[in-house]
Each structure stands twice: as C-alpha cells, then as structure tokens.
Picture 1 (tube, rainbow, N blue to C red):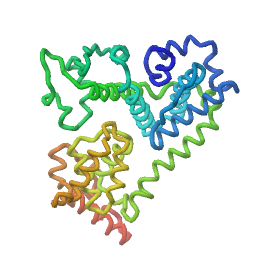
Picture 2 (cartoon, one colour):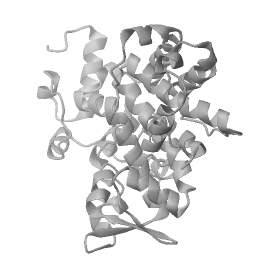
Picture 3 (tube, one colour):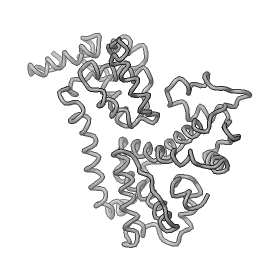
Picture 4 (tube, rainbow, N blue to C red):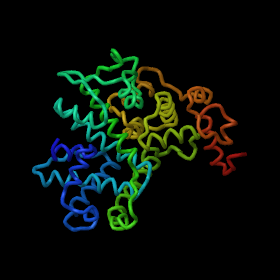
Length: 341
C-alpha cells in the first residue's frame, strides 16, 4: 500500500509506520500553524461521524493525501479528549463504513494485504474469499441477519466461503472493532487544552445530536414514560450498538405502538453497524402492518424469556406489558403523583 491507500485506510499498521516516518514532532500537529488544515479536517471527521457519516475525499497529490492521513490521529485525539462512549461508537462506525467503500474497490492483493493486517489469512480467487471459521465468527457474530449465521454459510474443513462483498462487510466490522477498542487514548491535558477551540464545536454538535431524538423524532411521544427495557434498548441503539433481533423487534413495535413514525425509527437505526436502509425499511413497514398484520410489542414475560428485561423498577412490578408501563406512568405524571404510589 502507498500513501494514497493509507489516506483511505489510516487504521492499518502500515499507515502508522508511515506517519512515524514523517519529519515532524507529534506535538507540532496540535499547535503549529502549518498543521491548521490538518486539525480542521480532523475536527471535520468527528463532526461528520456525529452527523451523516464521513464523506469520500479525493487526493490530488501526495501532500493532500498526507494531510488526510494526518487528520486521522487528530480526530482520534479529539474523540479521546471528549471521552464520551456514544461519540466513540459513532466515530468508530463512521470510519468503518467509510473504509468499506474503499475495501470493496481493492485489488485481490490489496484485499489480502489488508486482511493480513488483521491477522486474517484469506484465500482469494476471482469471485470468492475463503477464511477460517474462527475469523468469521469473530466479526460476523454482531451481524444479526439470518444469512450471517454460520449454519447458513458454506463451510468445508473449517473454512468459510464468502463473496468479496460479504468479506468487505467482515472487514468493515474488523475496522470498527479495532478503532472502538483502541479509544479513548490517554491524552496529556495540555494537548486537550490546546485543542479546546475544536472541542467546543464538537461538544455542541454532540449535545445537539443526543437531544435530537427526544425533541424532533418523538414529537408528542413522552420519553420519560418509557419502561426501563426500552430505555436500555434505545440508549444502545443511539450509541451504535447492534441490538439482537428480538430486542430490535420489541423496540420497533413499541415505538410504532405509541405513535412514532417510520422515518423516526429509520433514523434511530442508522447508526447500527449492520444498518441496511432497504432491509430496515422493509422490516419496520412489515411490523407497522404493510402486509396486513400490525404487531404489538412483546409482553414483559416474553421480554424476560428472550433476555431483554433490563433495570426493573417499582412500577415494573405492577404491570405485565411495556405498553401498560408507558400508559400508567403517563397517567401518574399527569396527575403529579409519585411513581411508586
């Protein structure tokens, strides 16, 4: 790989070595005027992650490619200074999704080189990639669509055969895990202080993004009345955690039952690592009744059976369904009574 590849895949070990070989001191990256554009781009990476995801950059020459590459450690430092779990997940996911587009276009040699960087030893031919089942499980275990279950894959002698597109999806997950597990970095306070002007804008955008869900998407819905299980699912979904299928169904049907629109729910799931807009829209519309059957969210007993009951409170002991919890708490709050009464 060369600097142009590293600019698009800055998380590989070769990119780290390339940066180490450049003629500058690390502290200059966060203070010198010569690196102002790099710092701005680093901030832009984080802001894009909070928003709609990273945009594809075009590098016209080596200098522009090196600036893009250097913006990656700047972005990681900014994320680490803020040290917010929601931001870390969103940032890792955004970088991984951006890398996915690059990975799909790699040559067979480039794809193999990338895989080896993650200690995956693939066999690659014109149409397929074959990897050991342990590598497959390591990264496919968080993808909940049926086709990703190992039992639904072609496996011989412990090796799984994938299309190149599916292998690119595996690599996306590998990238996400590498970035997320490496954050936050330990950053000296003086570096965070020198970046405060950038951090202020990021924090403001982060606060706005976190408040969007309850303000814009809920409208007349009352988030304060959600049962603990739905609060748990909602916070995980917003943080980019892949929900199990049973919990995703429970959350989607609950939100539809209390009046949330399909677009709001689609927006909620956009940060999921395995988000597929067409498939998600179909699933949400199916639960909403597009095929003639409108689904009601599961009862508390069903939630418990599937391991989706979290954080029971006093009110949970008096109801048997998440929707009843929502209605009961709304009535209590309207009357101004203590929830425990």
